[in-house]
Amino acid sequence: MYIGGIEAGGTKINCAIGTTDGKIIEQTQFPTTSPEETAAKMLAYFRDKEISALGVASFGPIDINPSSPTYGSILDTPKSGWAHYNLIQTLKTEIKVPIVFDTDVNGAALAESYWGAAKNLSSCVYLTIGTGIGGGACIDGKLIHGLLHPEMGHIYVRRHPHDHYQGTCPFHHDCLEGLAAGPSIQKRLGISGAEIAEDHAVWDYISYYLAQAILNYTMILSPEVILLGGGVMKQQHLFHKIRQQFQEILADYIHRHPLPDDLESYIRFPELGDFAGLYGSLALALQK
Ligand code: ADP
Ligand code: ZN
Image (cartoon, rainbow, N blue to C red; front, side):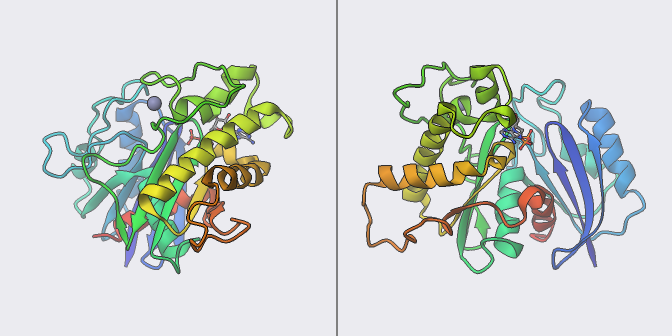
């Protein structure tokens, strides 16, 4: 029995067919253009495929409340043409199997719980630090939803004393996403993160903000592992800096807590790596 997955990102779409034990049989990728053109390509891909359920892991914010009149739509996104587009309604015109719709990061957290870094644990937080910052949490096999879905990037953090950048978030300016996502690095310095030396002060700012965020998620959700993915985490030296800063601001609180001394297994790269989102869409399909 096969399942289908769509990872809908702001710049590209991945579609895949997989097995229920998490093996990808085939996949395709195309750029995210207008919603109508993009959805038509998704439908064309699945037209001749035999699947028993489809998972759609999307950039957010999205309406995932099945009793809402706008269930299945993308909410207020700056992505041109996509705000209030109902992707799931369009997919349902042709795809007659159950569809599970959730955020890309919730999907990734679920996939890491099934097949990745959290497979022997009962909880994890998955955070992506890319064009934006988003997070999902899987606790005892269940994804956190609630009012909408978690928006872990839009939390407030204490400023690094040497960082005077105003922040990129159009809503909050200097929330975590505004201060630590990829575009904030590029806008501070005029060059992309990939070109900035490891010893540049900006990495101290970024790791200070991410360490605070991780401290907050730790205190609120008590996950057994925190996975950091996304383009910015290609800077592997950040892991060491983040763990150090986290240790410092944790300040020996809960020192009997079962956190490992070196934090290497607590704050780490996702095991499914760049594919966490695509596996996430398949993991979502499995919920039906
Ligand atoms: P998206 O969030 O759009 O799905 P990514 O996770 O690839 O995509 O994140 C893109 C962001 O990550 C961009 O802001 C880019 O500048 C930044 N980025 C990509 N590669 C690196 C790198 N090696 N070092 C630092 N930043 C990077
Ligand atoms: Zn914000």
